[in-house]
Image 1 (cartoon, one colour):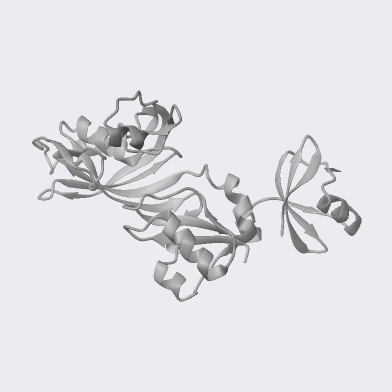
Image 2 (cartoon, one colour; image 1 turned 120 degrees about the horizontal axis):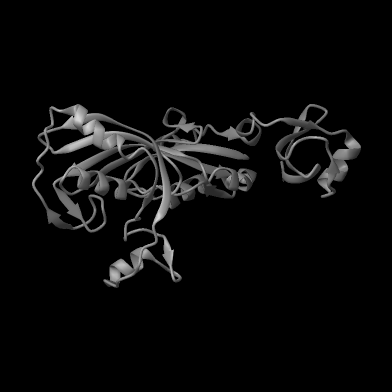
Amino acid sequence: MDGIIIVNKPKACTSHDVVYKIRKITGEKVGHAGTLDPLATGVLPILVGKGTQCSKYLINHDKTYVVTLQLGKKTDTGDEEGNVIQEEKVDISWKDKQALEKVFQSFVGKQKQMPPIYSAIKVKGKKLYEYARKGEQVEIPVRQIEIYQIKIIQIEELKKQIIFQVSCSKGTYIRSLCEDIAKKLGTVGYMQELQRIQVGDFKIEQAITLEQLEKDDIEYLSVEKLFENKEIVSLDKRKLHLFLNGVKLEIGKPDGVYRIYCEQKFIGLGVISQGLLKREIVL
């Protein structure tokens, strides 16, 4: 089996747990295209067999989330797992959805974001959460991110919660976004729930559950299917032999990734750079 499995990760399960289960079922080399926090649910692309060689083409994808923002309380981790460190009144006109939308829309676009201290970003060789756990002070580097779209889905007035959907660039911390939105609403807040509903072209509708995995009922996308939007380069047997042996071939096509075929059989992927085709992934 070589390809991608789209898993709907449940809450309280780590990305490593999912990798372990699939490795045990398939007996293949298994990896993932970016982790998903244990508290989060949703789309987790898992790479199997030679599909693991595709990781560099998948890690920079944009993402879409459904988020529950809890207002009135701030936690040290920015999510529901943390300890409450601050409480403030929530003075919001819940019925004035237009005003709320205006606040949310102000976050659309390119911007700098301060990642949460409880994150895996490394500073001076240590992860930020290691500093946090020891109570050590450290300067947190800001990141350039982009929010493409954000919209309110539901307002829970009694619970003081706002459920919203956001599409954003790689590297965006939703916990930080929740805190920033709460601040602009004149209070504090934290990320109460997080569901990732899309990573690149992978959608939640394609995802399978862990229960399906445990029944060995696995559906996966082949490498060929994954790159079906890439142009084809057809090689004859002589050129295929050279290609498979690492020889660069002169091909009159623009630079980029191509699907390689010989006699209508999918061979793998090749990359053209400055008119030369080189082997990338061979199945």
